[in-house]
Image 1: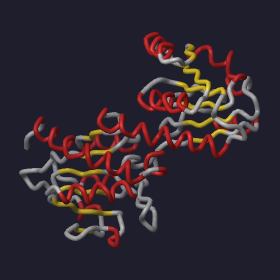
Image 2 (image 1 turned 30 degrees about the horizontal axis):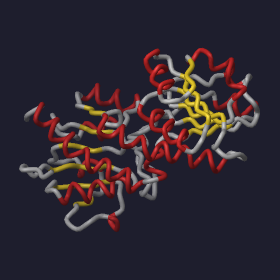
Image 3 (image 1 turned 45 degrees about the horizontal axis):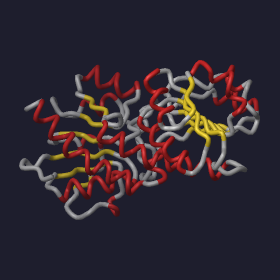
Length: 298
């Protein structure tokens, strides 16, 4: 799509996904200011700024990275050579009525937005990003399992906890390579759908009773599901791959104490397929931005 009004966007921090996004937004007519990304990776015409304050001056919207800012105020800026700490004072410099887009917002960021009256829009769970993002997430999860397991996924007892977008895509891929897939979901209709598709399906409450059968467990639920009760029943060589957003849904301390391998693998798209993940953002963000301004004219 193209944009009639040449809006000015501030892209703050990020990784290789944002490089793809910036190039695409510039090509369709957006004016871009950047902070927290290397000058050497910027296409011609992009204004690089030396501070957050300079980047957000006279702009129409702010785009933060998909992982956003952690609870200590550290910006996700993987391509920068030092930590970037953002404070409430920094966000106070954003002009009034300028929206801030982010993948997923930490409590730290939400509290600042609430205190400063900033419109904060989380995009990670929007279908146009979450559904295509489920593909690199599922591929990355399978890659990790193949690297860490001493057995093939073919015929492996593969448990998937939750049945949202990521889990649905992951189950399709696991079944495609011959894994024995069991889905644990709270929703009756989700379990019925899983059975139709050829997976075993059980309620989450049954996990402690069944976990000893698992070779690998993929968690997609952002709540403590794989707790001490579950871990004490698991085999010592069961691999746990937690795909939920940090801090995940696994008691990692107990897993470590019991010698059970458990990995927090959130944010896989940017790690395993940054070009694809960047293209997903580049395709979705113009519609998201213009839809916001259509609903919230300034």
